[in-house]
Length: 312
Image (cartoon, rainbow, N blue to C red):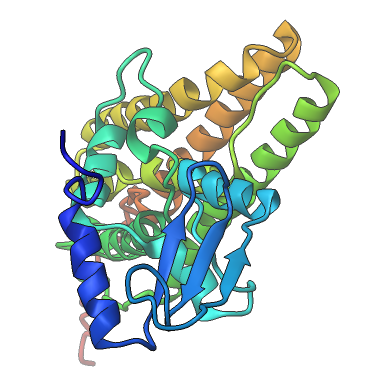
């Protein structure tokens, strides 16, 4: 029968050798019958047997353990106050693959596929929505200038002047829509969530993220609006509204359908109407085709009269 000394782990032998080489080192030992951690001050601990070590117990409180586990399970990242750079840095913590996947999801909405559940996956960002809005501002403003120039091509009385104020107008309209509408919708859903207990909701960042990515389809659409065919422009705007609006409806309908029927329908209709107003408004203001009416000036024939005088 083997003696207890033969049944030893290699790690214990190595620890004993380290303690004998450095008596001032400290070791941590866990007891099976106690949840606390015991720190043995080296000097005579274990097999070194040189002097009486002092045991220090480090108790982890239950609240700290629950907080750490909730952060791990919930994917929360400890950040500073809202006045610090680290606080806003977490909103842009995405890579190119994630952004491209979310752009792809906004271009191909499928029935029963929630954009927040399948694409954001509890990790919303502001990087994609911000740059989508910036790109859309310049594509709409520059495209509108080119459209005006092409529509006046061949008009000898037309002199091209860059309309830089369109950039300012486009920025105000697009960023106000991408921020104020989500704020209003998030506040409304939060209020209804308090009134009707069974209604769920999304966070403010998730709502802004959905609206930002839903505008991506208008970037290529605004470039194609330069083509001087009115029927093609309205066809493109109809396709863009259907794709972009479907992303919003498929995302927010599972939340509002638990409300009363009237409120659910009214909420969805409001979302679609505001989205339609943005698209139609940008088209009518930036890409309006001017119709020129040729004015006909009547030509008065010149009659040359020769008066002959008779000499007397």
